[in-house]
Amino acid sequence: MRSQIHLFSASELSRLLRERKISSEELTRAFIERTEQTEERIQAFISYDAEYTLTQARLSDRRRSEGKIHGPLDGIPVSIKDIIAEKDQPLTCGSRFMEQFCSPYDATVIQKLRGQGAVLWGRLNLDEFAMGSSTEHSAFHVTHNPWNPDCVPGGSSGGCAAAAAARQTPLALGSDTGGSIRQPAALCGVCGLKPTYGRVSRYGLSAFASSLDQIGPIGRTVEDIALLLQAIAGHDEYDSTSLREEVPDYLLALREKCSPKRIGIPREYFAEGLDAEVRDSIESAIEFYRSQGHEIIELSLPHMDYAIPVYYVVATAEAASNLARFDGIRYTHRSAHHDAIDIYFRSRSEGFGPEVKRRIMLGTYVLSSGYYDAQYLRAQKVRTLIRQDFLEAFKSVDFLLTPTSPTTAFKMGDRSANPLAMYLSDIYTVSANLAGIPAISIPCGFSTKNLPIGLQILGPLFSEGKLLQMAYAFESEHDFSSREAPL
Image (cartoon, rainbow, N blue to C red):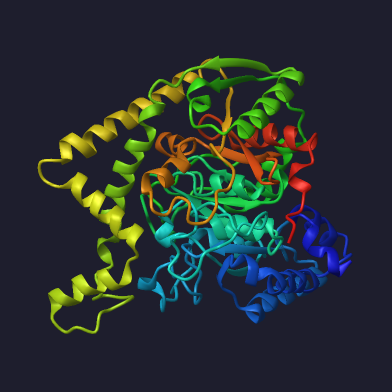
């Protein structure tokens, strides 16, 4: 069985552990070996410490032998996007600025995973400071899509999605500011969920855009997503944006029959720029839901055309503010120059990559005197209109169905010289972050070039349980999540 362990989902592995058919050390070794076999082609990890991971697995096995299991994740490896703090482990954020930095504390989500007995397995690659849609902007290396190594895995959580698709890890924890979980999940043929803003603590997440960032799960199946979300959701006193909302039993929601719902199809997500094969797969998914007794309702979200410009004003403004603390004086990279002004300018020039510099400059511009009202303040007003569009839509429908990405995975380098084309990769995902609502991406088809296609389901605030139920209903009748990348 050991040679096939990496093919099992996290939920299946949890059942095997519960039935004592396998040990945590065995399955953890299997994923380490799988990573060592495939990592040269995929480059999903920035770093990993096999012995540190195996020590956790052995502790899990000891607990199990003593009848002290902490939960369904006990003994299951979970890999972490290298922007989430894990005590005494590297926290590079994909940047040369942080190359030598190790976190002195655990993020709340890491504390929760430790409390559940999860085995923390490696630090995953990302676009620098989570600013990108292809994982080509990492300061260390480019991550490859397991379905076609010449293509990008998406971003910024590209390492998470690629590692899950390559079966290097059963579960990964990423962050989503404008689609950074859902878009790579779609491009790599795995599942990814952005929770409601405030559902999961952001304490210990290195901030990109604080009003948009949200930590969330990536896994092979919808059940895996439910398993990991259950472990990390909940209020946290260390995060002032964390909400005191009861956390339902997400796994129980999957077992409940999905009663007929009203499903909205927003016209704006099916306009010019949508790839024909992606459109066909999404329309097939819509027909599936119709055949299951759900009512399909076409509607409009009139301010969606403004989502990308609003996002890139708000996100860059917050990024410029959040990254001001990287000054070369207090911690992280420091220039060799001795003059205080030179240290500040040269440290930032040497430490930040071109995409991060671009966004800092954009953010500084929209916040500057004379432009604040015309750019930032106006963007916040339009953001409110976008949020109101969703609130109005959810008065007449229960969920919205859209493509996750307008195209399948694109070739590396194709959009590197055109930032606007790269930014438009997130055209269908940024609005959920602007509105703070939950959204999930699941595999719903493949192109003629055997590249995955993702279906996005969006729901009202705190509707994660129902979202998972809707996604599970589709997954249960299709085999897209079980297909293996041709490594």
